[in-house]
Image (tube, rainbow, N blue to C red):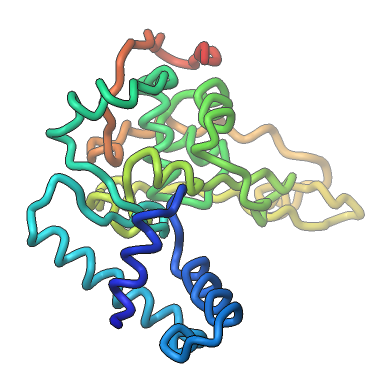
Length: 255
């Protein structure tokens, strides 16, 4: 009995996608609940062996050109139907209500987050050149973006990154499957300098220190408008409906 066929049978009957760690635990549990030598053989199967077996199975299903295939999305494996058979499957099981599609500003902000994570809201705004308060809130509510700690900068602003739901939304196995966007990665984001101490004031800006000023310096000028990235803003998705995106700062879109 081959490991890949055992995994195939498990995934065929699974009610949800399963990752290699879950499959390893299931193999160990099955071995602990039986005295059959053949079953106990797979008790200590490693995650690497499971991964290799699944990848081999994935290639075999793709080569067979059946109406379904094995796919890995967000690190979890499942059987999926080929898109061209959707009309008949939709008639059989019905169609799930889909959330409103993301607006273009939301997609741009999501792409910036995906390629440059972790980054702060201010850094997103430097790259886009406009406020992202509304679209960032939408992405947080949709579970596509999450807080991933605080930046090492004055005020300790929150850093943001993408979630597992982001990978599932775009059907990606991992972030390294994102399309190339070298231009977006090359855009320089100015990190705020750490504040230094002088004359007993812990909040004296660095420019005041350079000038020997004892008091606080004038507020720094706002960052010049950053160019909108011309590279592809990450993967896109088919959806219905449209959201109007006013120029400049966008109010929170309706979910």
